[in-house]
Length: 497
Image (cartoon, rainbow, N blue to C red; front, side, top):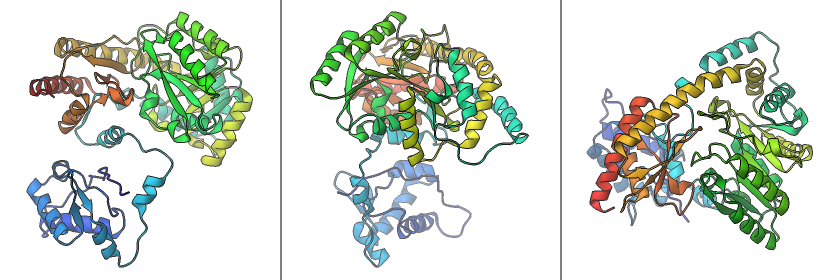
């Protein structure tokens, strides 16, 4: 089966100052991509409109180049639309049999990202894009000065550029142990594993602790639905409905019993504080109920605490791990949300045998998280930068949240509803009008350089939500983007879409 793929890099532009006509430069560029094997048979080219815009040329100029290449047998159109690298043309230019990479891509066992996730990942780096759903801090909110100080300190002390021990830097794990105590979590350095972000922790757990075919329970909607770390490991996902207080305990009991009847080991994945994507906070009483229910049912819990420090109105209730007296909870933390995603650094807290098992798998996959990043993170915590940064960050995020809420009241009061998040990054916006296709809204906005995150990424059946973030876009971008979003909604409603 040949693979259709429109995620080609669109960074190249023809040079108008050259004597060679622009369409000839485009032809030469595409030929070079084909002859080097970067664009193989069956590969789908970007849409003509978007590609012409990216290259800064008229669409007719691009079409001329594509027509010439099609006439030469290098490109072909297909039923249903799209332009592809021709199989016969590609093999003909190679003068010999070539590997079928498209078949190899299809047969790989790791699931590809959802199509919209792939589009989002590409579009986030498009010049001029307004990112209304991005789940990371804006560059101006990141602690640039603090890390300049840390890097200066590192330059004046002995440091290792070698591999570190399997569980990660002892200095960092000791600093994290102290930091976690301030949140009520008692974790010795031996019970902490340093990972290259939360995604790696999810991958290690999926392949190291859970047999294929076992079940993972999770809130619905959930961030976990938007990635394939567990599904690619052959695990089954079972969604549990939520309310404003978190996961429904009665529905959790029903689902866990069903899983138990099928002889599957079960794990519950939850984001109790400032949930992604809904922004909700699990109440103190619900957390106690959850711990009691987990104990009764004999299920383990994976607690994702990525947003715990990002409270804006008041701190959330104490974590599930802080209430854990049995080693039932695996606690996952990261610097990606509150500090910097570029550090690629997180941690997992759990029973020592579990940590040693996952550390062994980690050594087999990457031989350790960056030594330099770990040394910087150790100083980040040990020298008190984290507490100071959070004191400066929370007021700035609060301003952005309140500004976005004002804009929603101005532009969306008659077409949507939402809750006021007490922390984190997200507003879970629900449209109250119909007919409205969220999928069409996503693509319509993307054509106008407005990037939103549709709700069906987090719940396949969701047809009314989008996830908004006030953490990344500037206030000016928020206003322009939300106004365009509201106008797009009204146009789609008027057209009956």
